[in-house]
Length: 440
Image (cartoon, rainbow, N blue to C red; front, side):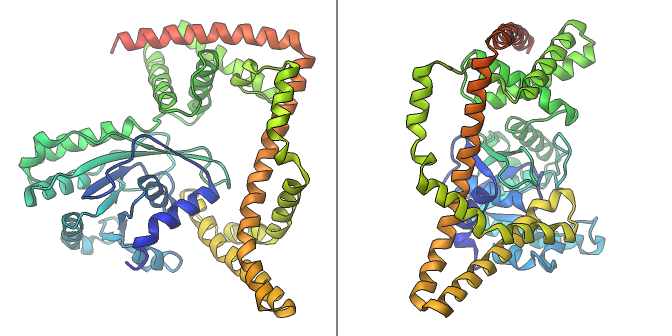
């Protein structure tokens, strides 16, 4: 477990480099025994996301074959993971799960945070899988062994495109699950285990987006974006997730009840979003100010990132890491990982490739120009790469802003029609959500 004390910092750095990572919700307890439960869409990257969101070392339950895996076995062992012996892997080893429970209870008694993925598998389905009962049994088992309270906290992982570098990733930290009324009943009480598992499922559904199919994602997110744009709600907030969840539930209900009027609204929302997409716009763009004073303020606030120093950093960072970027992609594709493990391979392979590249450049500079220059090169390379990456991302955003500005200015009649259409859709969506909430 030599890596565990610094594991949170490593995870936070890794996920923020690979993804545009955001954390929402209140932080879980920073000390004392803690059970962190999360959905499992992205293989070995998920523990890194949960740990980064927790902000403290977390020991995870992991399937036993990972401990001997040639690529990640050393990392699983070094991070203090606890092996789970699944019958699907080797039925003869299932009795050894008593060792797993003993290790978990010992860790909790010492104030450790234990991470569990109650679905038991990493998958790419649009909704939570049926939960296993292990997390409930652990909580109840800890309760009868000690008088120390145990916080059981759900964490939802929402990934825009889990295998794509610099795509959006959100960790939503939920409220602790209420279960003290069950604490005295122990892990042998089948009804208590079933009830706590139900509450865990409910807690995880409050911090995850559960759809009937992935095709629904663009529709429910489009409906949320339209509502947020017209009612000036904060994009990316916790309320946004709640509204998106409501949209998913309403869509499922409409299909069940064959509500033709509401389905027509869903079709109109989808058509509006498709039209905006063809224009390279989003619902919030229709609310943008395009008068001259606003444009001047925009330019003044961004002049630093458009200057020669920013350009030098952007180009230098791109050229410096062009080779390891493509090498990482080639090696990852050659490994042919499953879809749920692609980002895991990219991060681990990239860590090796980029580290070797940085060392090679530093060694070359040191060999020709002296040790001091080599050490300076070693220190500056990561800084140049990170600042260059951030600068290029800002440039892409600025280009989108400028394109939107000139599009709106040149097609005012079209934009006005789209604004009126969007406001009408937002009002209808608001009424629909209000009616739905009244039926709950």
